[in-house]
Image (cartoon, rainbow, N blue to C red; front, top):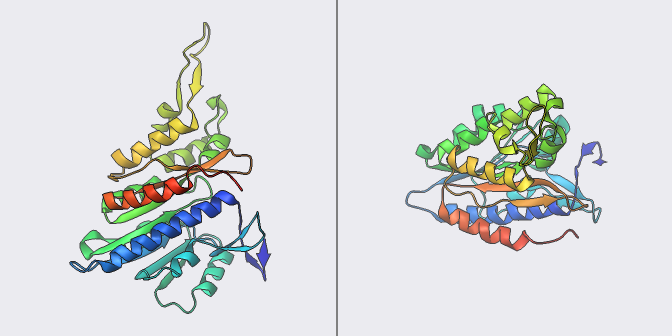
Length: 283
């Protein structure tokens, strides 16, 4: 859907839930960071797949504030806002949204490179800066190096979209021999290496008399749990609560929304927020 040439993504019930979750945590995060005085900290809001800043609800047809707009309305405000998108029209929409704000920087380009080269270096622990980073790709468009760098820095909390539907559609086939090499490369880049293959496939308990051993594909839940552990053990985030499943109108899981942080208080806040929404059904 467009308005005056501007693209606005249509979002379903669970996407609106996701926006509410992020909005609630962003408000709590900004309140806590703004109140800290010894030492005083500068806190930054980062949206790597920012979109146009506004969406259209599939259920109501009404405009829905996106993550960037919600963040700009948080009180007390963040010190800086960094919005990134690959779509030039969406970047123009973001620029129009934030044109009165001197605390907003907008980037047109591949978020993986922009984050690593320009944005994350502005959130260094030793500079008394902290960041809340939203990593909400449309599919397997995120590089593990971004996740790993955020974990290494110790100064960044993340919300992360784990696009299990894209994985199942293009990579995690029951007969993996037919998967295109470029799709495997996309999965490797997101996961960080090829260890997902051991997670996603296991020898069948029944086996086969002839030919190669039969395999069983792991469940979505098993793959999601393995990635949660990877965020903790490999990326180095100390606190990674169980993600919430985001579904489509047929109640199929489209992606899992993760949160990862270095602070137990952050995990506690997010657990409370997620538990409010975890068992809600589609409207």
